[in-house]
Amino acid sequence: MKHILFDADGVLQHATQHWQPALQSVLGLSDEAQAKAVLDDIFQAETEVLETEGGFAERLERVLAKWNRPGLLSQTLDVIHAIEVFDDVMSTVQALRRRGVRCHVASNQQCARAEVGLARRKHVNLSRLQEHARTHGGECLTEAYITSRTYYRFRCAEGHEWEARAGNVLQGGWCATCRAAERVGKR
Ligand SMILES: [Zn+2]
Image (tube, rainbow, N blue to C red; front, side):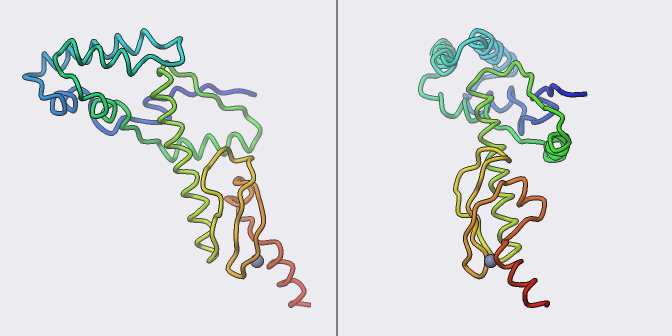
Protein backbone atom coordinates (compact mmCIF):
# COMPACT_ATOMS: atom_id res chain seq x y z
CA MET A 1 0.00 0.00 0.00
CA LYS A 2 1.53 3.31 -1.12
CA HIS A 3 -1.21 5.90 -0.84
CA ILE A 4 -4.26 6.42 1.38
CA LEU A 5 -6.99 8.99 0.78
CA PHE A 6 -8.70 10.40 3.85
CA ASP A 7 -11.99 12.22 3.87
CA ALA A 8 -11.96 15.42 5.93
CA ASP A 9 -15.34 15.85 7.63
CA GLY A 10 -16.13 13.03 10.03
CA VAL A 11 -12.72 11.38 9.52
CA LEU A 12 -9.93 13.88 10.12
CA GLN A 13 -12.06 16.63 11.61
CA HIS A 14 -15.51 17.42 12.88
CA ALA A 15 -17.66 20.50 13.29
CA THR A 16 -17.83 21.64 16.91
CA GLN A 17 -21.46 22.69 16.61
CA HIS A 18 -24.49 21.80 14.48
CA TRP A 19 -24.75 24.41 11.78
CA GLN A 20 -28.52 24.73 11.58
CA PRO A 21 -29.31 25.64 15.22
CA ALA A 22 -26.11 27.73 15.40
CA LEU A 23 -27.13 29.72 12.33
CA GLN A 24 -30.68 30.07 13.60
CA SER A 25 -29.31 31.67 16.75
CA VAL A 26 -26.55 33.79 15.13
CA LEU A 27 -28.80 35.11 12.36
CA GLY A 28 -31.88 35.45 14.57
CA LEU A 29 -33.99 33.26 12.26
CA SER A 30 -37.61 32.67 13.23
CA ASP A 31 -37.74 28.85 13.16
CA GLU A 32 -36.06 25.60 12.13
CA ALA A 33 -37.66 25.64 8.68
CA GLN A 34 -36.21 29.07 7.91
CA ALA A 35 -32.80 28.03 9.29
CA LYS A 36 -32.88 24.95 7.04
CA ALA A 37 -33.76 27.08 3.99
CA VAL A 38 -30.84 29.44 4.72
CA LEU A 39 -28.51 26.47 5.23
CA ASP A 40 -29.62 25.01 1.88
CA ASP A 41 -28.69 28.32 0.23
CA ILE A 42 -25.27 28.20 1.94
CA PHE A 43 -24.68 24.61 0.73
CA GLN A 44 -25.66 25.77 -2.76
CA ALA A 45 -23.11 28.61 -2.52
CA GLU A 46 -20.46 26.11 -1.36
CA THR A 47 -21.21 23.79 -4.27
CA GLU A 48 -20.83 26.65 -6.73
CA VAL A 49 -17.28 27.44 -5.60
CA LEU A 50 -15.93 23.87 -5.29
CA GLU A 51 -13.87 24.14 -8.46
CA THR A 52 -12.70 27.71 -7.99
CA GLU A 53 -10.14 29.36 -5.70
CA GLY A 54 -12.36 31.97 -4.11
CA GLY A 55 -15.75 33.56 -4.30
CA PHE A 56 -17.38 31.84 -1.33
CA ALA A 57 -17.52 34.92 0.91
CA GLU A 58 -19.10 36.97 -1.91
CA ARG A 59 -21.74 34.29 -2.49
CA LEU A 60 -22.37 33.99 1.24
CA GLU A 61 -22.90 37.76 1.41
CA ARG A 62 -25.50 37.41 -1.36
CA VAL A 63 -27.28 34.64 0.58
CA LEU A 64 -27.36 36.84 3.70
CA ALA A 65 -28.68 39.79 1.68
CA LYS A 66 -31.40 37.58 0.20
CA TRP A 67 -32.54 36.66 3.74
CA ASN A 68 -32.29 40.28 4.83
CA ARG A 69 -29.36 39.57 7.16
CA PRO A 70 -26.59 41.87 5.84
CA GLY A 71 -23.55 42.58 8.00
CA LEU A 72 -23.46 39.13 9.61
CA LEU A 73 -20.81 37.61 7.33
CA SER A 74 -18.07 37.12 9.94
CA GLN A 75 -20.49 35.59 12.48
CA THR A 76 -21.77 33.19 9.80
CA LEU A 77 -18.23 32.25 8.78
CA ASP A 78 -17.39 31.58 12.44
CA VAL A 79 -20.18 28.96 12.54
CA ILE A 80 -19.01 27.29 9.32
CA HIS A 81 -15.34 27.39 10.35
CA ALA A 82 -15.81 25.91 13.83
CA ILE A 83 -13.71 22.82 13.14
CA GLU A 84 -11.77 20.50 15.43
CA VAL A 85 -9.23 17.92 14.35
CA PHE A 86 -9.41 14.32 15.64
CA ASP A 87 -5.99 14.08 17.32
CA ASP A 88 -5.93 10.26 17.37
CA VAL A 89 -6.60 10.05 13.63
CA MET A 90 -3.93 12.68 12.92
CA SER A 91 -1.45 10.66 15.02
CA THR A 92 -2.29 7.60 12.93
CA VAL A 93 -1.73 9.61 9.75
CA GLN A 94 1.67 10.74 11.07
CA ALA A 95 2.62 7.16 12.00
CA LEU A 96 1.63 5.96 8.52
CA ARG A 97 3.69 8.74 6.92
CA ARG A 98 6.72 7.77 8.98
CA ARG A 99 6.37 4.26 7.52
CA GLY A 100 6.43 5.73 4.03
CA VAL A 101 2.71 5.54 3.22
CA ARG A 102 1.62 8.71 1.41
CA CYS A 103 -1.51 10.17 3.03
CA HIS A 104 -3.74 12.63 1.22
CA VAL A 105 -6.97 14.45 1.91
CA ALA A 106 -9.76 13.76 -0.58
CA SER A 107 -12.46 16.21 0.36
CA ASN A 108 -15.25 18.16 -1.26
CA GLN A 109 -14.67 21.14 1.02
CA GLN A 110 -14.49 24.52 -0.64
CA CYS A 111 -11.04 26.15 -0.39
CA ALA A 112 -11.84 28.66 2.35
CA ARG A 113 -12.96 25.93 4.75
CA ALA A 114 -10.11 23.58 3.85
CA GLU A 115 -7.66 26.38 4.66
CA VAL A 116 -9.23 26.83 8.07
CA GLY A 117 -8.74 23.12 8.81
CA LEU A 118 -5.13 23.28 7.66
CA ALA A 119 -4.38 26.39 9.73
CA ARG A 120 -5.93 24.68 12.76
CA ARG A 121 -3.75 21.57 12.28
CA LYS A 122 -0.62 23.72 11.94
CA HIS A 123 -1.53 25.51 15.13
CA VAL A 124 -1.93 22.17 16.95
CA ASN A 125 1.43 20.93 15.61
CA LEU A 126 3.23 24.12 16.66
CA SER A 127 1.74 23.73 20.16
CA ARG A 128 3.19 20.20 20.28
CA LEU A 129 6.68 21.49 19.45
CA GLN A 130 6.40 24.22 22.07
CA GLU A 131 5.12 21.76 24.65
CA HIS A 132 7.93 19.32 23.86
CA ALA A 133 10.54 22.10 24.21
CA ARG A 134 9.03 23.15 27.55
CA THR A 135 9.33 19.61 28.94
CA HIS A 136 13.10 19.96 28.33
CA GLY A 137 13.15 23.40 29.94
CA GLY A 138 13.79 25.01 26.55
CA GLU A 139 11.73 26.67 23.86
CA CYS A 140 10.76 26.51 20.20
CA LEU A 141 11.88 29.80 18.60
CA THR A 142 10.09 29.33 15.27
CA GLU A 143 6.63 30.82 15.37
CA ALA A 144 4.88 29.18 12.44
CA TYR A 145 4.43 25.50 11.58
CA ILE A 146 4.95 24.40 7.97
CA THR A 147 5.42 20.60 7.81
CA SER A 148 7.02 17.84 9.92
CA ARG A 149 10.01 17.87 7.52
CA THR A 150 10.65 21.57 7.89
CA TYR A 151 13.50 22.73 10.15
CA TYR A 152 12.52 24.64 13.31
CA ARG A 153 14.78 26.59 15.64
CA PHE A 154 15.07 25.52 19.28
CA ARG A 155 16.89 26.72 22.38
CA CYS A 156 17.72 24.39 25.27
CA ALA A 157 17.87 25.21 28.99
CA GLU A 158 21.64 25.86 28.63
CA GLY A 159 21.08 28.45 25.91
CA HIS A 160 22.32 26.35 22.95
CA GLU A 161 20.41 27.02 19.71
CA TRP A 162 19.99 24.70 16.76
CA GLU A 163 17.59 23.71 14.02
CA ALA A 164 15.86 20.35 13.71
CA ARG A 165 12.96 18.82 11.85
CA ALA A 166 9.68 18.74 13.76
CA GLY A 167 9.40 14.98 13.26
CA ASN A 168 12.85 14.44 14.77
CA VAL A 169 12.10 16.51 17.86
CA LEU A 170 8.68 14.93 18.42
CA GLN A 171 10.34 11.50 18.35
CA GLY A 172 12.55 12.55 21.26
CA GLY A 173 15.46 14.38 19.64
CA TRP A 174 16.84 17.30 21.63
CA CYS A 175 20.03 19.38 22.10
CA ALA A 176 23.06 17.61 20.54
CA THR A 177 25.53 19.92 22.32
CA CYS A 178 24.14 18.97 25.75
CA ARG A 179 24.11 15.31 24.78
CA ALA A 180 27.77 15.45 23.69
CA ALA A 181 28.74 17.25 26.94
CA GLU A 182 26.88 14.57 28.91
CA ARG A 183 28.81 11.81 27.13
CA VAL A 184 32.16 13.48 27.86
CA GLY A 185 31.14 13.89 31.53
CA LYS A 186 30.42 10.17 31.83
CA ARG A 187 33.85 9.13 30.62
ZN1 LIG B 1 22.01 22.35 25.05
